[in-house]
Image 1 (cartoon, one colour):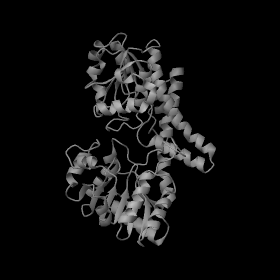
Image 2 (cartoon, helix red, strand yellow; image 1 turned 45 degrees about the vertical axis):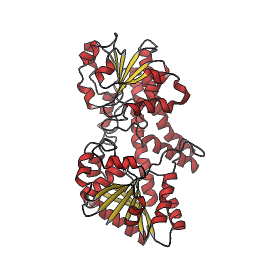
Image 3 (cartoon, rainbow, N blue to C red; image 1 turned 90 degrees about the horizontal axis):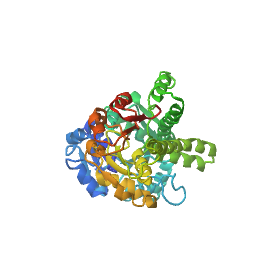
Length: 457
């Protein structure tokens, strides 16, 4: 069997590497038009950071895993074609800011139809709106030369930072297909691929539309829990309750459970906000305005939490941070990844720069130019002069030297073991610290002299 994956990003690269590892008799080609990205996959420095990924790629690359820009050749050779291209939120026209931009999906469908030399199984791996399979099938049917195509939905449920563990031992693998003889046969073919290492009882098969919708709903429910506990964190601060204690108490209820009840400065990443806004747009398209408003409130609460965190910094520093140095610790949207998409740090930095603060950022995995680009380039006209007040440090101690406050935004493990006595000595007094992830011992920090604040405490 030969598999081709179109798209060498966060989904395509790791997923195909795991298939190649677990099914050594299957030839896997990952293709992308971005030559620099493919070159990185073929180098010693992979284009994405993910714990354990490097080892998997080294074991399989050159054996049965190949990264190439030869898209047409890979399509013609493949039995199964995974589509793992980007589906960003539209920034223009109808549905701007909410609907998924499917231009890359459509382009891939047309390319497959043009290059296919026989029947193929097409697998949607990208996160897409319900009924996208109909669009793909329509384009394939209109442009093919009589070949039979089956379209399946196989959404990814990876969490960045634990993607390799998630792929190695997934909670479930979801495969949706048409309830036809051809669709059933295609589903069985893909089931057999995953069955090389995933127990059969964890492989769920559904119809196409249930599978497509399940991805959006899964992310919406996870994000909803985060926004829910973050809303309670504000109430905890107002009443004297401790949000971690509240979360622990309600998490012991088996009907609720403890996961995704960690209050923070807010969620980020490539999926949660994008998928919820996509869900909102779908609901509006079907006339379900109340359902749309319900899910949109999850995103609004998340945005509010980010701005609330920055606002608390300003209020605590005597209602002004103008010309004060604020050290922002962490820029990736979560630990163990270098992904900055929708990171809470972007909003926090912009809010502080808008208040005329001098912001210095440190993150162990995100390059300086990416930090500057995310904060400044995407802010438009709202941060006039902000570029001169944003710097990037090489380590925490450099960032903290001469700072008036520290704002911990990403929960990197190294932040738990810092020499805070040394940091305190190098800061202006009173020295403030704002823990946006609740990973530090605030009592010990206060003993050192810090004015320490957490989320929901």
